[in-house]
Image 1: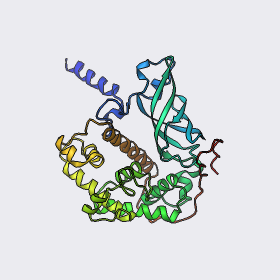
Image 2: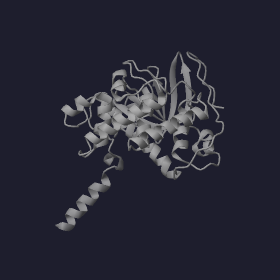
Image 3: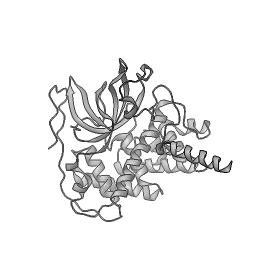
Image 4: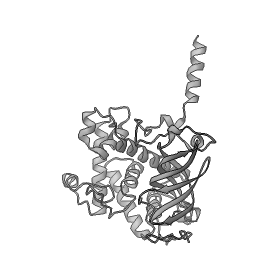
Length: 332
């Protein structure tokens, strides 16, 4: 009997996807929430149920082609299971530049017709890695890797109009903000990437400002100027660190803290630290965790060490002309 029980438990563990045990997996399922189990391998097979039409997914792949037609972005995304067309139904952040060759994660809705997945209606896009010509090794150019280099490289492929000096200054500010507040710098960096895509001038429709998207009254309470990038990062780090401390006794404090950062501490407190059953905080936790996993993998591959970074120039991709109907120019 004991042998049978052991075999059953061991088999169940093997049958459970590794990603199902990750802290950032969507806490809820429902309309507008990403279905993390509906992968390209499942949805790009020959026949799929019509009930999958409209399902929200986050699919990773390389952008084979990026075009702007009639003011809307169209991508050909090469996934693990084949290529899929992505038609963005609204303007989305991170598509201001030609993203051909980039590794990305696309949030979108499945469009199923005649038993097949026809395309994704894209809603947003997460940048994970640029084409190899701008890869991290190429950015380092023989210098020793460290955290500032990793973050500066990430900042630059999000905002290639910035100088290397500007990117590294922001990276140092984030590193310092994380150190002062005893935070995992890659978690803070992942939050910033999802909040503002590393745009220091970002202002949301609700009035949130800067890299960590602080509301003016929140920034005032934190004692920082949200329009100053370094102070904004300090404020975001202070807020996130406080939320992590508040829910450190829970099984998954990171999910609780991030949900509170997104939807407000009061709402999460009323739920005893649980992620609200709403699409925005549920997806928010998932997206930040997804980015964190990607950054952490890169850091492990390059054995990131704390060394002083150097400086040199970096190539930039071409900017998409607003409303262009021609094919997006290839990166140069």
